[in-house]
Length: 172
Image (cartoon, rainbow, N blue to C red):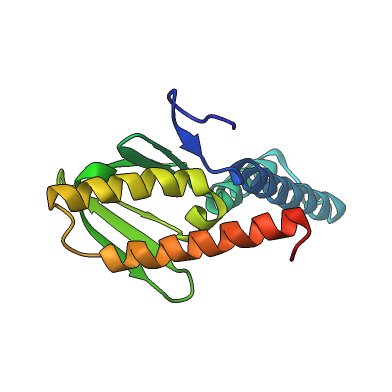
């Protein structure tokens, strides 16, 4: 298992590939923009700087958030900020569906973070850390909203895990 962050933490297994894709797209955008501008004869140092800046912006927009979890915490890091919640002290879990489904988690300390619920279906270790924290929150009585959402996601994670095991064993 690859570790991300402090000892004992789990990270998104697919983040590196997604980050690599974001960087490649940004580099391709930069290369094509500079090439077209150079071919048109209008490339200058200022315009080259503009293309590099726009490419960096494309990379920042396409770069997925990095999700890590450990005993009692879940963190989401974007290029601009890092948000951490205490999973053993959750107060609410909400899921918003639509074009891009996202999960919103809040804890008793007022911290809030948003992430794609598919992150948990692709990373059972992250799910385990969240699920353990949710059980602690339920035992302590802090989680007042969203236990049903966590159950649905848990069933989805279990289904995906079973399908992956069946595919890997050749039974599917």
